[in-house]
Image (cartoon, rainbow, N blue to C red):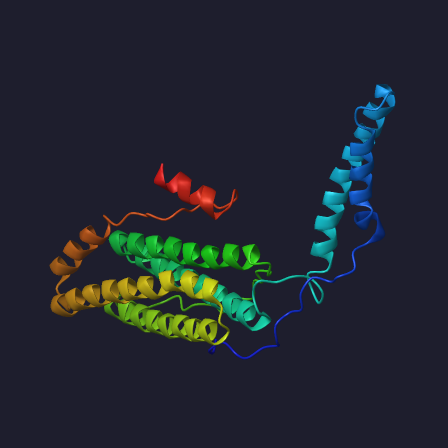
Length: 258
């Protein structure tokens, strides 16, 4: 997966002409106000019922109208170039999760349960990173698009090799996030700049964690006792991010904090 490529220009705004059944809505509401308090209250109640029904149906129709015109005519807060680049990053985060799950499986197969736990926790963190982008793109009027993921490696020579590859991958993700930030600055997309700042900070922590474990593994080298001690230490890592997103990211965050 390469760096975000250039895409098409910004999407146009909302069309000026609305459907007739939506434009007539203010007239219906004005008529109801005029008839309210009239001499024939029964007629007023009936008319009020139909006017409020028209209000509800027109609101639903208006929402559908804009959803139907999202591609090509509807309103977007994200430039197409920004949306495509964010979708690319979302899929990179999902591949990260895929990669760390493969590493967790390899460690479990080798009896290194602590290492397996560490990588499974990392899997959940990467899925959280992907879900943040997924929700942001959708909330900004875009569409989160999932792509096919490359198959990750399934066997590794040693824990040191796994963490070296992990660091290399996180450095790639850091460069990708930096490219996204540069694009947001070029597009004058201040909302996306604020959103991406969290990832910039997160990547500093990710690389620091990897470097720390690599340093320990270099010291341990082929000492099985040292490896077992580190394995027990890594078994203590716990998942601190939400893992269930059916109600949306904010509800997941509240559930994780409870």
